[in-house]
Amino acid sequence: MDQASARALNAILGERPKEVFRHLVEAFLASGEPVGSRTLSQRLPLTLSPASIRNVMADLEHMGLLYAPHTSAGRAPTEKGLRLFVDGLLEVGELAPDERVAIEARMTGSGRGLEDVLTQATSLLSGLSNCAGLVVSTKQDSLLKHVEFTAITPNKALVVMVSEDGQVENRIIDTPLGLPASALVEASNYLNARLRGRTLDVARAEILEELIGERAELDALTAKIVAEGLATLSSAGDARHTLIVRGTSHLLDSVEAQADIERVRTLFEDIERKNDLIQLLELAKQGDGVRIFIGSENRLFSLSGSSIVAAPYANSQGKIVGVIGVLGPTRLNYGRIIPMVDHTAKVVGRLLG
Image (cartoon, rainbow, N blue to C red; front, side, top):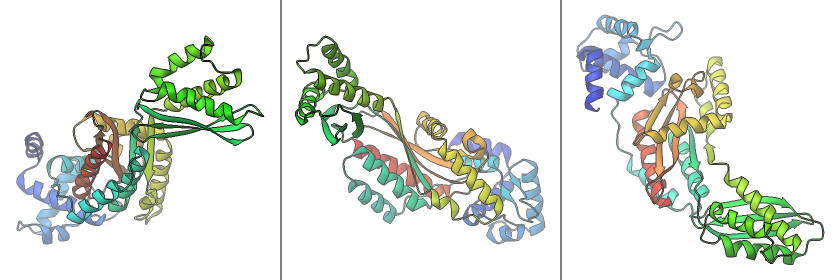
C-alpha cells in the first residue's frame, strides 16, 4: 500500500472497521458469497462478538462500502468498497514458481510472429486465471521484408506482406482473367525492390509517383496489379489496432442464477463492441504498471459488473505498443491476477524486443 492510499484509508476507517472490512472482502473474493458476522468472527484476529461485528458492518454499509445482496444476512463489498480495498488493503502476492515457469515456457516457444506471441499470451492468461484473456496491439509501421503475389483462382490473387519483426498481412485482390503468372512475379519483384527495409508509408508515395508517371518500366497489366496490391495493403495498415480475446467461456463457469446469466449475456455484448473495448484498454497505457478497472468505473462494463486487470507492454525502443489483461467478474482474485498480468506483459515486451 502506498502512503497516499494509507492516508486516505485511515481517514475513512479506524483500525477496527478496517480489519473487519479487509477480512470481509478477502472472504468474499475467495468464495463469491456474501459474508456474515459469524464467519468474520472466526476469521478476525480481534476478539469481537458477532453483535459487535454486525454494528461495524452496518457502519460500513452506511458509508457505501458494503451492501446486502437480496435477503442475505451477509454483506458483500460495493464497487466503491472494492476500489478502496484494491487501492489500500490488497496484498499482492508473488507469482507462483510453476506459473512463472509456465508463462516463460509457453511464451518463448510460441514463435517469432507478433500475432502468435500475443495469441499465446492471451490464451495463457485465460487458462491461468479462469477468466477471459485479452490483448490490444497497436500496429506498428514495421520495416518490410518481403511481398509476394500468388494466383489462387483465375481472377484472384493473394498478396502476402511480411515485415522484419515477423508480422504477416494477407489480402486477396481481383486480377484480370488470363493474367500470365509472369506478371505476378514481376509485380512481386518490383515491390520488393522498393519496399524491403522500408515502411509501407514511406515507400508508397514514391511507388505511386513512378506508376502515375509511367516510369516504372512495367506493362499496363503488371502496373495495375502493383497499384491494386499497394492499395489493398495500405488499407490493411489503416486498421491501427488488433484485438484478441480468448477464454470467454470461463465467464460462464460461475453462473448460477438467472441474474448472472443476464449479466454474462450483457458482458458478451460488451465484448462484441470491440471499438469500446479497445478504447478502454488504451486507457491502461496512460499509467505505469498494472491498471484495474472495476465495474461501472468504465462505461463499457457498467451493466455487466465486470473488472479488467491490464498492463501495457513496450517494444524494443521502449514505446508502449499494446495492453494485455484479464477480464472477469468484480470478485476477481486480484492479489493473484495482478502479478500474473504484470509478468506476462513484461515477457511479451521482452520477446518483441
